[in-house]
Figure 1 (cartoon, rainbow, N blue to C red):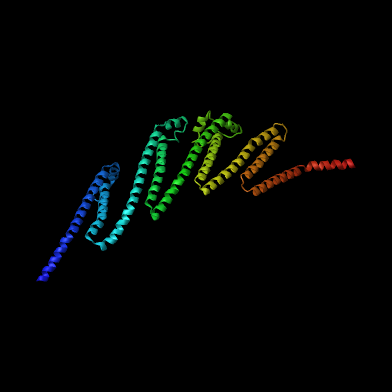
Figure 2 (cartoon, rainbow, N blue to C red; figure 1 turned 60 degrees about the vertical axis):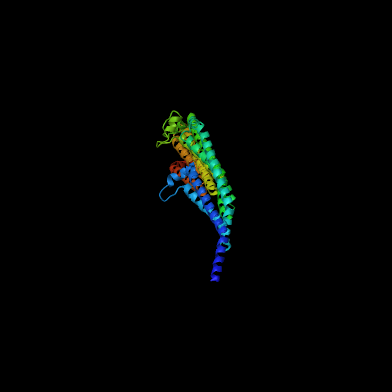
Length: 412
């Protein structure tokens, strides 16, 4: 009986001696729960009442979709509870159970400042980028871009609203990407931050090239349109269409540049419009080549350069052929005006000979099989020479016979 009493007394003493630790653990646990609950409620109400929270919750609220503030508040609640568990277990003396939990909480507490710093950097960058975008958009919206475009006759190409929106977006991206890079570097998690930082840095490095390419295309487009309008006005003033009309080529007559430009959608294009369009296309291709070089897209740049080179050869050959048409007509008309009986035939032969010659030269300048074209031209001239010789020989047999008879009579 005495032994039972001693065991009960020993147990009671141990319970009484453990009561301070137990009470301390309970008080510490209650304190942790209260703090966690206060933080949860504060985050819930603060985030849901903010503009970001309201914008996020507008489309996300539902029976199975808690609000952003509630989700973050719950996460903060359990995180604080997790941080209070090791001290509670330490007060109770549960060191063996505390070891793995201490390791986990140590890791969490090491990363929490990094995560907080990264989140703070990204949020600040987001705020600055948003403010800068609105400032740039407001500044450009106040500028008379549309009015200036209308005065420059570029109203259908330059839109003030689109330029304002594009400029604001560019400023937004230029600020936000470095903020994301700085935030990822603040995490100091190489396996995550290194590939993402590399990707964002590549995007950031490409933005200046993209902007310069867009600017180059924009200005080359403006220059091409201005060059087209100038060519139409200049060639119309020189009477370029009248020149071709005098050569017998049917062309619609236009009194001024506006009428010539208005005739473009119709099926018949005047030489003025054709030349102006060729000049505009050449400038656009040059602009595209320059833009591709800015973007460092060598295959596209090489392909466009090849197209421009081939187009230049074809244009040069076409100019040679077209220049030969008035020259052949001028020479033929000069010969025909001599009044000789055979002048009509000779003029026609000379005209077609010049046309064949300039066609061969023009096609050769185009680079379309120089050897084949040269051989065909030689064969054509040789055939014409043989035909002329045969015609002269067959037609002159009687005259030759009479000449031989006179020679025989004189000798006798």
